[in-house]
Length: 300
Image (tube, rainbow, N blue to C red; front, top):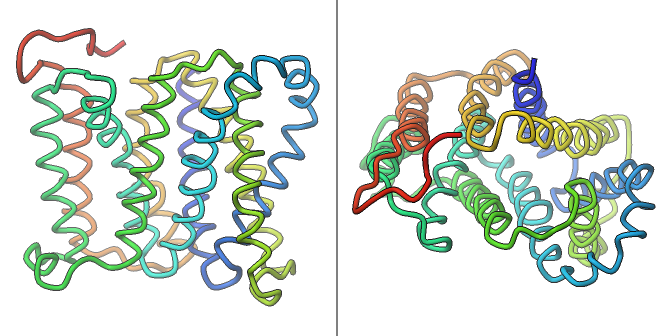
């Protein structure tokens, strides 16, 4: 039963990738990021505002860290994801997003001084080869000759931003309940997005029958329900077991993209995605230190 929490969280995350792709032709990335934050803050405020106010002294002590969390997770990650959707496929977005656990582990080596494991080294190299094959559409050398598509590059930056967010959560361990932390992070993210939103032309920020359903999904399912399911999953299963579920994101997204967006699934998606995810899984499961002794990296 506990495994249903991260499973449904990933299903909602796959839906968010599809919504991002649908929003690319309907509304400005800045506008939908702003609207989803407004809706998420309103919904979370119904049950979080009072506890957060009672806990305001602790929140004020740690507001700079919460402000950075909000920038990395809600503002930068979401805005870049929506922008990436304009020039890459939903399947590519999901595969690049699934790199977050691997990127988090590699950043942990630098920031938290975690030991580099054999799985990280081998998995990182394998994932890199898979990505070259994927973004080169079957020609690994084309990446070096022509570069990568803007959307793939933006999505990789978005994944890196979210990975850094996860590492800083471990590094600082702010003593604030999860919902209050998410609420305050979203508030700061909204502040960051406000000046950008005010510069968006009215036609690109219109609320109509095409954009409102996208915003409702992004604000309710992606921001609130997904957060609840993931937080509860981590509480019940631990972060390592939950992170393995992210490997299912490309599968769910590819199926949804084929059914809803009529995206073609090519062989380079299958091979490149499989090799990339094999690298991520290798990094998650092989915990032998590359140098010296392990310092508690075993799976929980």
